[in-house]
Amino acid sequence: MLLPYGTSASDSDDLLIYDGNYSEMQIMNRLAKYLIEDQTDITVTILDEMSQVNSFKSLIGDSHTCDLMFSYDGTLLTTFLGLDPTDVPEDETLYDYANQVAGEEYRLRLLAQVGLDNTYAIAVTQEVAEQYGLETISDLVPVAGELTFGAEHEFFTQEGSMKYGPFTEYYGLTFKDAVSVDVSLKYTAIESGSFEVTEVYTTDGLNKKANLVILEDDLSFFPEYNGAFLIREDTLTRFSDAPLEDILNQLEGLISNEDMTEMTYQADVLERDVDDIAREFLIERGLLAAE
Image 1 (cartoon, rainbow, N blue to C red):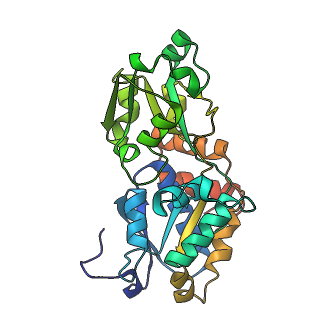
Image 2 (image 1 turned 135 degrees about the horizontal axis):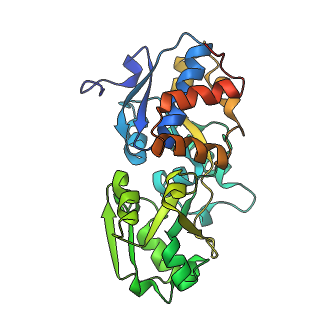
Image 3 (image 1 turned 30 degrees about the vertical axis):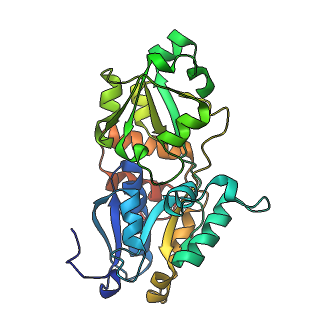
């Protein structure tokens, strides 16, 4: 569902979230929905799927069309705010600095970190790892000219510093070719041999299915990507009768990389419904009563 043209989220009685275009986002959105609806009278409406970049654009400004999104401190800093990890003051964490700037520029607030660190990683097929003895990203340098790199369209955009161009320049990598594919086709493409090297998220259950080898980021190019909900300050004001921040912060430190990898594996490989996966997780952790 999309909002009618010219309609702001402020005009709605519901709390609005755009769904993510991959399972981790979808699971996190439903964790938020079930917690909020269970503990308040608020209806949470999950709208059509959007990329992270488009969700953020829909979250900001006076004519915003959503109230809340799940994201990562590294994404907020590098993609949404256009900064680099080197911009973070020495006495501050990336999370705190990104939160401060987002508050100053957009009146947004990162809620508590949920526990997972879904950073970018570079992965190769098991066959290629064994053939070239690859363990680190630097190991790719002398053999990159024989290999094709493939990733989703968003990794090749110019928005943010943690993308293909800055990455290959930082490591001195020159691949034989670079292929951009729809995110839904990436794992099928690498399993069918369309490319041998790709960018993945560390909590993606499809890494397990595709038997990919994650290479060590030995030069520490990619920053942390600690997962957290990003909310408008005026959303907290609009729903001031409900302790939204406290409710969502019940997830603080509760979801490990292993937890999310298992949940995305269930969604993407076992093809289980994300609603069921999210509900079961909350019940198991004592945050939702079993029906």
